[in-house]
Image 1 (tube, rainbow, N blue to C red):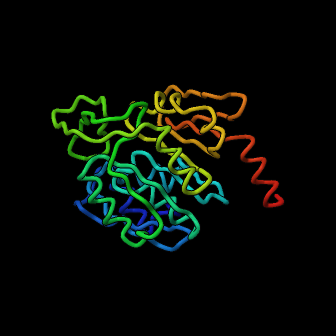
Image 2: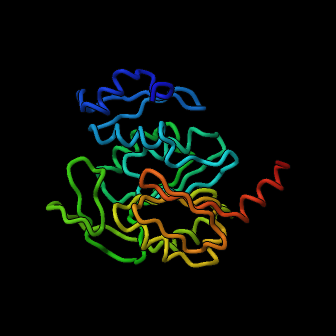
Image 3: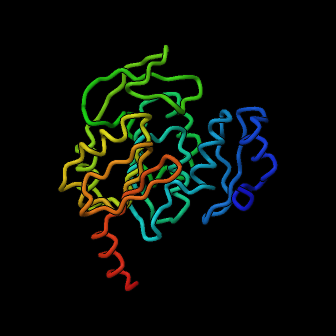
Length: 239
């Protein structure tokens, strides 16, 4: 936090004590320089800490193609896009309020991401989406009083489409507030084999292909690293 936040005392006050007014800009240092996404609540500061300071979704150095499911207001996408000018992102976010905020935060990177205004899960069709005021905790099976109908895409259709376009998926990130394990387990084996790293939020991590993926779990984030893809990339780069 001290090395990443441009104003660490303000950041710490917001993060630990809930101080500050919102909306506000929260400046952080990145390999692309300082960026200052707009945050709309204390909960968005938590997200910045998880992603930029704690590195919950640490991106491999040679990554080029990222699939970000549950993009929220664009904080995770900002992290991915600022790692390298070569990174392109495929983003999926169903909440219209979050989409508006995401587009504001990612305005400078519009030529390097594609956005689908949809949920992604182990099913497809129109679904009920529960949401709450912060926009951080909404989900398909979350029982909030504010419910909307959204489009939902099947995870296999999403991955197939990205692979047809880009030929690779270096990082798949899933944060869908409760459906992560089911979504991961629904991925077809031939698609799983083409994913370099898979990060998803869960307290009970699953590994759909132990013979292929190394599993690590910390701070409620599971990280599956494809041994074959990592080996191939090291051979390609001469590492």
